[in-house]
Image (cartoon, rainbow, N blue to C red):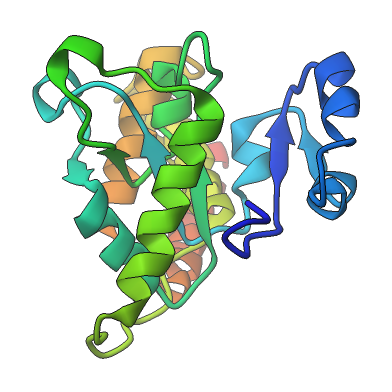
Length: 210
């Protein structure tokens, strides 16, 4: 991260022993000392407007949209809001639940016979592509996307509304939550629209509860 000028490192349920040992990295101590710890992916990306997950799997192996690294880098640079790049553990990668917090996925074009990469190498290649594409001209800046936290609140309100209305038999099902979370992200709401939708859902819930 330090090599390519990125400093905002967020760790989710980090293994503290390894994290503390890594703080001695040559000239990278500033990034690690400023790193923030979170108990969940939802909390870590709550203020982000575009969340892109990384995977070693190809487009046919995942259900979410999966863009090439070049195209994903262009989209990240076009985003007017805060962007998060989500990397999974080196051993297991991202879980389905982790991916449900992402707007889309991207992968490094490794050969099919050897898809997986060392985590540090994967981060370096991805960040290099991100700054390399900075030399390309940009299109007009789009409207600020809704932050992940805003989308998460919409999902919580929607699940409650679906349960109270009888559409959903019970709230809290992991599979149901993932589907709703992904549905909301596919809508591509702006922050302003997300606030409006939350207001609508709160009014509906007030009526349903009464």
